[in-house]
Length: 356
Image (cartoon, rainbow, N blue to C red; front, side):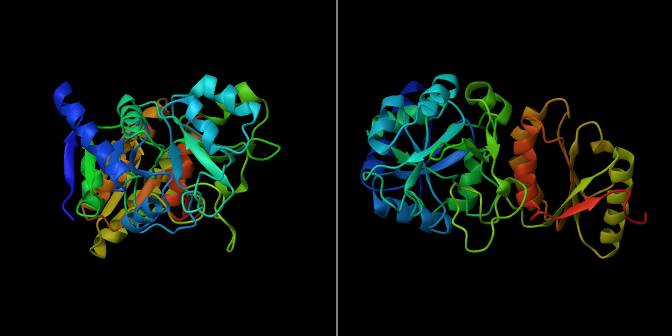
């Protein structure tokens, strides 16, 4: 398959032409990668079982991993949902359009192929104007997981999509680098208590300002148990992972630097390339083959924005081992560490606990 490209950052005529062609492909049952404010999504007709199957096939994604349905207007939620709790409208007023996905009981219109076999559906109204324009032009809700090979770091630029899915999908819309860099927050409103299933730029603190108490799903801290069905993307399978083996390192900054540099030196003797992901304040202290400053610790949004691009850069540089500094899990930090923990396969080192 030859993948077509459309430019959304050029002239308005180029933008409209690209959106029109992409909308035509979606209505015909094809797949289009497009930018949102979070990451690039791989879009298909959310009401078509065949389109959902194509998405799973292109990504190499397990079919029990639910897809998020994107809409362009709040009113478009009603035909997709069997029940809409009042909490949905309160959150929509506060955060839509924006990086928040809400899970509700699905209607019969949503095929089980889109919902991953569940009786719920995950829905989002994206903040990106081009994403909403595409949905409107297509005239249908768009199911869109991240536009990457399943398990790989999510794409934050069109070139990342091309690396993974070029030749496998019909079209890529290039809207430049995304604004947020981490996938949307997912909150489950289908039960009696609002539950955070995936943290993101809309933090648990922000959700609680609107809803009151929001509980955290236990899977945020540990892998989903064998045999359990994932209720949202990213819960069950290895996600966001670079090709290298990755470890998270916590402890006092001086101890972390000392431990990582010791391990990097040992790896170098074995002929292995080592990469480090660190805060800008400490990045210069590491002796490794590739060091990526993620951003300042007091600016977690900057760290979140750069994380996936950094993981892909480590792959590009042929790194075999990655050591990543841990960050506080407050605010957006919870989302950052959720992604890093999954990328590392829950592998941790605690500086100061072993002989140095």
